[in-house]
Length: 108
Ligand code: FES
Image 1 (cartoon, rainbow, N blue to C red):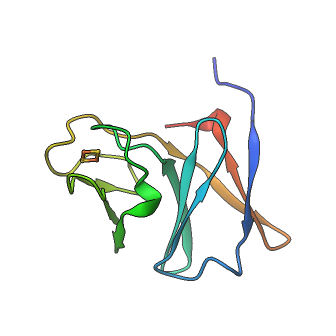
Image 2: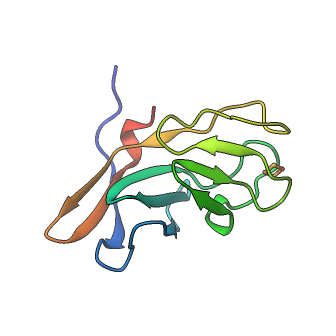
C-alpha cells in the first residue's frame, strides 16, 4: 500500500536557479536539485557514510558526495560510483505558486 502524501516546503523555486541545489531540513533531510529548470529531490544523506549531498557538487544529473566522491544520479537515486554501493531514494517535487514541495511519502 502506498504511503500517504507528506509534503514539505522546499522554499522558493525562484531562488534555486539551474545548476544549484538546496538542503531541506525535513525528517529525513532531502536535497533539491535544479537541472536545466527541472527539479529533483533525493535523500540528503549519502548512502556510504551520511555526508550531506547538499554540500557536494552537481554536474548535469549527477551529484558527487563531498566526502569520498561517490556519485549518484539525481533522477533515479542510483549509486554510480564507489565507494557507494547502495542507491539513495528519490522524491517527487512539484511547484505551486512559485514554491517547491517535496512529497516525503512518495519515495522511490
Ligand atoms: S560519505 Fe559519501 S562517498 Fe563516503
